[in-house]
Image (cartoon, rainbow, N blue to C red):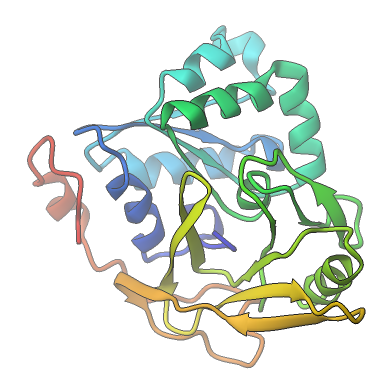
Length: 265
């Protein structure tokens, strides 16, 4: 996801519901990793507010509080059906993951068929690289390399990222890839891009390739609007804040779903 979901206070739950709909388990175990933002309490609270009413088993893995939780982080991750990674500092997140063996755990989980999801840093990390603002100014940063190519996020919301991404792709510092808006997401099956989806009208995904002459070629990718999507954001930048429509599914309706039903289309 280029951005959106519960961590960005997106009231429409279209992207988060989509994550659960992709799980094969009747009541999937889904773990949220807020490492990139330093495990903030508000993100943890919003995660449980959104997911605890749905037919799933939500949990949070805080690498900053392992002394309190007393759980083995690798074992916990490998027991999940879905792993959802939050945004923040991509460079810091990956450094902490390496210290705890999370990078290799993610690779193992991916090969086992665990659903890997995330937004911003939690989306770019699966690719060979992306554009991070971990150091202040946007710059190319390497990812885990599970997926081929690169990803840049917050396409309309943080305009300073795109020129850096274009330049990095043009000179080969990053491989060709995609730039995604807040509310837009790319769905992969293995290393194959299946489709792009969105939780709001107007959310874009661009394919960015080098043109061989020191520049890049950009083309829009078709995006499917998810059920319950929000209207378009106002303003040309369309990224300063997410102002979606009211949640189309009430908590009571989700609680009424029978156990084992996890597709809300």
